[in-house]
Amino acid sequence: GQQLNQSPQSMFIQEGEDVSMNCTSSSIFNTWLWYKQDPGEGPVLLIALYKAGELTSNGRLTAQFGITRKDSFLNISASIPSDVGIYFCAGQLYGNKLVFGAGTILRVKS
Amino acid sequence: DGGITQSPKYLFRKEGQNVTLSCEQNLNHDAMYWYRQDPGQGLRLIYYSQIVNDFQKGDIAEGYSVSREKKESFPLTVTSAQKNPTAFYLCASMGILWGYTFGSGTRLTVV
Image (cartoon, rainbow over all chains, first blue to last red; front, side):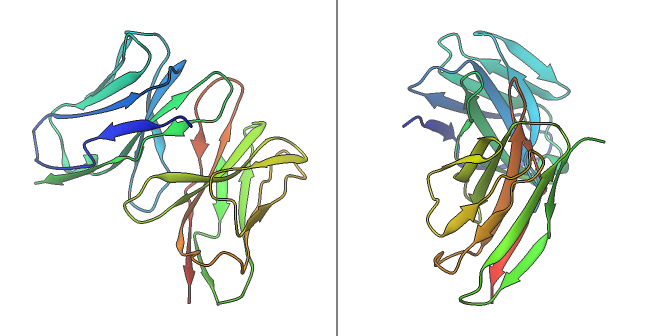
């Protein structure tokens, strides 16, 4: 079946540092999505990407949809303590259920 | 405001009991999903439903059951056949285009 390989599995960084995480797949997706999950809550959508090569920003977050439609990265600039959580990438073929990566656990040292 | 509501937030189950987790949405979404999340782990699909009165097994359906009698509601029953039910359960819905909206989750603990 379809799988997404998300890395790194976890990160422990200093407040103010930039963060980068990525997802790769052997399958092509129409849409890539990035979610953040706070402890004890459901995931919340951060960024959605629709076009190959698309680069999208949302505040301190920047994500790109790979040109082959098989990968994506998420960058967080100048991390702050509230960035703590689990970040999930997800790929979607139009109208179908999402395929999720295993998540990147982000811990920020203040 | 439109959204998806899961209840209860915390649930305790005795050995051998069946328990039902509620998921209600007012987003007019056709598709609904149930995921299980273990500590520090990713999301595993239990069941999903793309229209009323129809549902499909996901990757880990054994020990669970669902119903979809109304568009707004997709309850999940954790049966006594599920040997390791302690986990965080997430419900999600999807509209016509893209992406899921998630509920805030139910944490189930076996006591």
